[in-house]
Length: 508
Image (cartoon, rainbow, N blue to C red):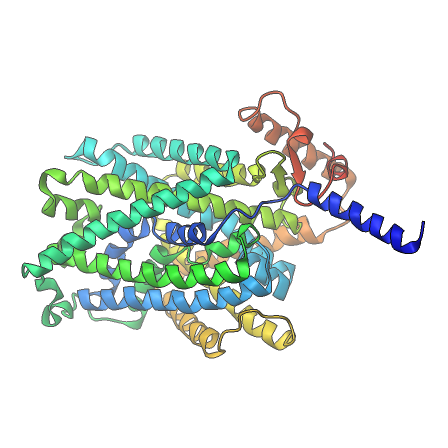
């Protein structure tokens, strides 16, 4: 056989082998990509954060400015992420970019804080909000029992975990449908508010009244108002977590970002204007469910529509966070920063079931611990910290590898402007709430010893590997018997892009 014939045969065999590989499929088009961004941003935040933003801003006018500027800052950040997403086309978002640019330790610290506190806490807050609004019509004259709220939240998380384990298509269809539903719910609020304004009910929005401050404004309090708003806007970067599943990411990633962020900013600002068309600042601050209070005042016998609409909104938010946060765990395991088991995907469904189970279990644990709303500031601080480090990485990559192919290249003023705002916000947040922000830093830094022991220490004793492997495999095998009875893991999963031999090496 000639050399060229041998080369052709080898190439053909490689192509055949590649086609048989088990990997995540590209099933996310432009519509689903927009739905992931909008669906992840619009969750519980717009129904929780208006109270916190107004409380720290001190006036209606300044709170509206915070909402508009918050969307503008997200737009600047998302443009930077669009460049990073097509330059480093990996799933995993911030974690993958920071690991590629700054190395393993910095990437692991972002991963550690996200897996340990950021995403489980956010999921728990959204799930509790879902439960509160679902149960509210049954407990009109009092708050729903906390145990009932927790139970319903847990059931919701478990159900959506099962959906995400079963099919990527099911998960994205739920995201598409509920994104449309939550937009319709907010459009209803906006239309009712505009009707109120057309009738002359806009006293709180008059400039002479809107800028009457209940307290002397300070830069520190304004920074905290931005942190509260950032919780409502969090999720704008989540499409970057699933880049490898996006159809034509070089086109659809930036398009989805440019469509979604301005749309959400407009909807958020108009929703807050609608709230103030029928509620005084004092009424909004005293309400634990802003949308319900709004509905009770304006919708009369149809006030039940509002809690149901909010429940639909938060249901879609839970689905979106599960979908994207599981891909972060998947990416971390693939890089060797988490147990390799989490980088395995189901042979038939092509879904990262072990990573989804980890996200589900962490969220349920947070739900069982108790009150989670106090952790919003921790989450917002860690979020902004990771955003800033990632966008600083863009500037460093420009200097370190100037000739790297960049299908999208933003003007340098965009990342620099974002970083200036970021530094001011975090600096004054630390000054105003040193304990809250300090604890956020401590949570992140606890990952340093874990990294050096778990990742950097390569020559660990064999008995330790064996013990950990047996414990992890036994635990996951037991959990998965709920999903598929009497089936061995080696018949279900393969590590992404690998063959059967990997399972032997992993000890299955």
